[in-house]
Image (cartoon, rainbow, N blue to C red):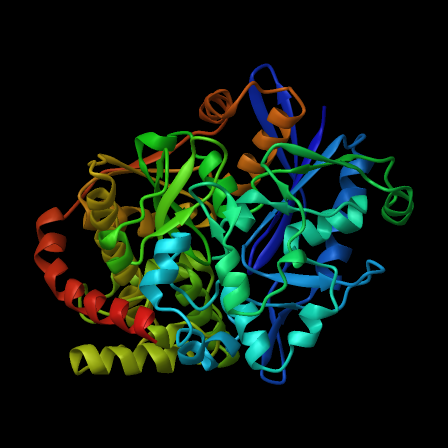
Length: 495
């Protein structure tokens, strides 16, 4: 059988063809395109029509190489649109970084404390959660949009709906809405009432590995394919990426991309006073593969700095950026990569400069200094989060598995090993697509289960190993970064 994984990220979309041959997964890229936030007025959106067009282009390419049997879609979570009683799309898809939630932060938490919300849902307190956007819609006078809609569909489920004409919400997406109790997989009725959100908006829940159904004749004709099955994979891309980690529960996993998701697998949610104070997220996965993790701003800062320099006429490739950073003086500008200043796009150099002046009384000036500042901050923040997670779950981990596109950045891999004083195994780079494909294969009966799928990954994709270097110097500097992290973390959660 031939499967296609559509892996949609915040900066790019990719379609991969996957075939299982002789116990190995053959992964072939078939199409890629740039993705990004579109600013309209004071709102931030995704170009859903463009995303749809590119997906269809990729499927046509895959079909030309042989019949496609199944399709799965994974993407960033939290973002949604609404469909009306006739199935028509009622609104564009707002981006999770849209500032409306920050604008209404205090009003939203006037109805419920951050602690109570966390204890109910187990999700981290953050401005990008789905509940925050739904509450902001009400405060912006848009409740009529919710009243007039038939269903709310998360972005991958919206694609699934237009492929199959069937509606649902996949569990790993539902689990991050802040509206679900992860302990029993039920909606939290009190939150729907508190924020006047019609509960009927939520479509039927679909578990990972559900075959949603066949593509419609209209879709097949428009897309130029013979027809396929749409599979509800782990549609939250982090959930798919963790499934694609060959080390699984044996390691701390860092899914490194625009965001860095630093987490561990646990059999059940961990929701207590410590995890609330540390703003540790509980995220859903297939049975037995729950994630306990914390977001770190990730390659977003590098990407935004790169865009700033491009707008100023200076173009650097990612390898050039790493080379410059490696040559710059170490530990000159400690900052917290999760400082709230960095959340919204634009003017990242000015933001980093302001934060560094506040923290250090001095700031980077050259491109090399800016990039070095961010690389070190990310690696040190990874150590800080790893230590929090170990306390939360009561276990020490000797290995860190960096997966996703960011694992190809060897400087950050090495800095992470140095900062965390642990072995780092890097790979696979396309973990979200690989996890997507594995869930399709499980759903279609070609792979027995997730452990069997991870064995396939281990056989199919080599890992690069990084050992700690200059450990004493990194440990000596860690206290300076810890002071920044304590201040930045408080600012993020207190608003």
